[in-house]
Length: 280
Image 1 (cartoon, rainbow, N blue to C red):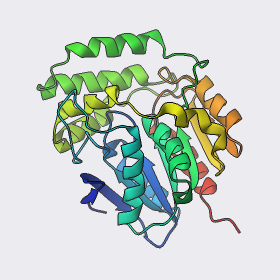
Image 2: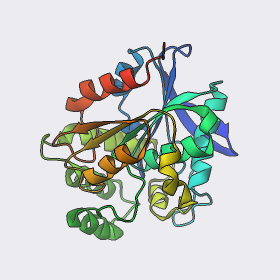
Image 3: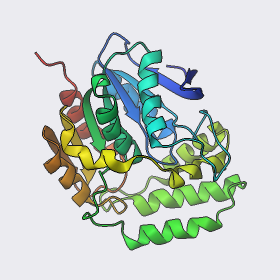
Image 4: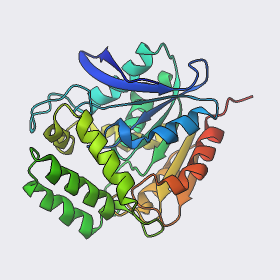
């Protein structure tokens, strides 16, 4: 249950596990510009209590993992997918259930296609295959991130305020923002970071996006979890995934935004436990 640094694909990746390694493994992949802290510790412990071996980790350029000069990421999305497979290797896991949120959900889809033998099921939270016909983010989100260009990434106080406001913009209508909780998570993230500004590299990453045109080829069971009020990846994206994936089940989070709110954890953990249960 303590964080460990592993050498994977010639980089350092910070990982933390919960539960019994003999139980079925769930690998959690977080979204852009977000470290492992956003898979909150209590969430991970509760998921592990369902009889799962849960692994969360920092992607490149966030948290305690390898970082690159801001504006110059020396890697592509496929490298991040290979990182996820490499983490399974260091834990001695042949196949795992893989769950990804936002960008992490995109990486999960790519992993199911790039490393199909390593993936038992996929859980796709607040994510998309970003098909061109799907609706764009809401204007308030686009404007918020456009204004982010003025953030001084060397000023922890400024970055903290920007990050708290980001989660306010991404929240849905059902749950009020728990600012003390969000602020504490932001502060923990910044304290753990090797280079705060490096997280912005996720916004300029490139890769082979042809994987995302192959969604229908993902044959493993899929659980789609999506907030109906998501302002950055609208709910229509989740509906589209549920229609295109051949073995998909949709769990709508009514009134939730681009978030995994604690008030939804009971519902989400129950669904994930059922989805990843051993097949008899």
